[in-house]
Image (cartoon, rainbow, N blue to C red; front, side, top):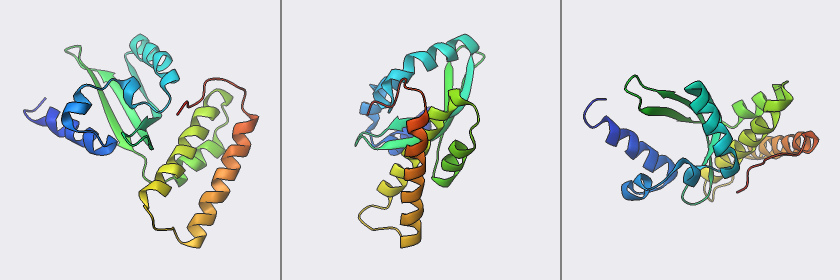
Length: 159
C-alpha cells in the first residue's frame, strides 16, 4: 500500500460513519454494523471463501443507516481488505429488491432498500424533498414493507 493510503482510507471511513480517527481505530465491524446479528455468519462465509461482495448496511455514530456496496478480499500478504461504496440513490436498491427472485436474498435486499430510503431522507436535513420525490419515497416504503411481511421470519436488522 502506498504511504498515507491507509490514513486516506481511514479518514474516508471516519467521514462516512461520523467517527474521529481514534474512535474509528477502536471499532470492530460489529460496532459499525446496522445488523450485528448478521456479522458472525457473513464473516464465517468470508473466511471460508476468502472473498465476498454484495450490499450491506453500516451504522453511523449517530445510529443512522449507511447502505453500501462492498467487496472484501485477502491480499497476497494475508491482510484482509475491503472496499466500501456508499449507495447514494435509493432507487437502485429499491428496484433491485423488487426484482429479486431468490427468496434467500430477498430479505437483505428489502432491508438495504429501506435503509437507503431512510438515509436519503436523513441526508436532506430539515428540508423536505419536493412532493413528487416525497410521494415516491412513501410509495417505495409501503411496497417494501408489504414485501417484507411476506418473507419468512429470520434474523433482521436489530437497530
